[in-house]
Length: 103
Image 1 (cartoon, rainbow, N blue to C red):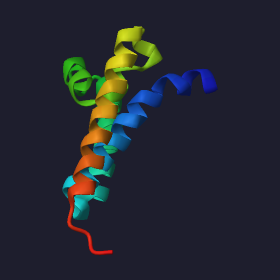
Image 2: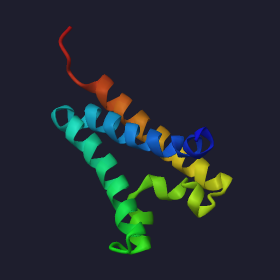
Image 3: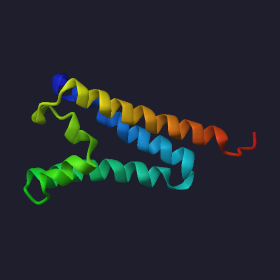
């Protein structure tokens, strides 16, 4: 079971990165945006596997499509998804540090 879940870690980081970026930029909507990103990613996978949604749409909207063992990802896929996650986390962190918070 671990062997099937570890490869999905970069996609989970992307979802976390979306949430962190939302928290830095739109703090009141961060929870909703984070859950929506997760729901869109998982919902797109379910719809694509049920042949309701075209596969190209799934691969466009879900970070899970690029690292899923079912689609034989390469090391480049893992690196790109990890870089996207790092960029989102960096954007969120930078935006959060620039906010005017009274301490």
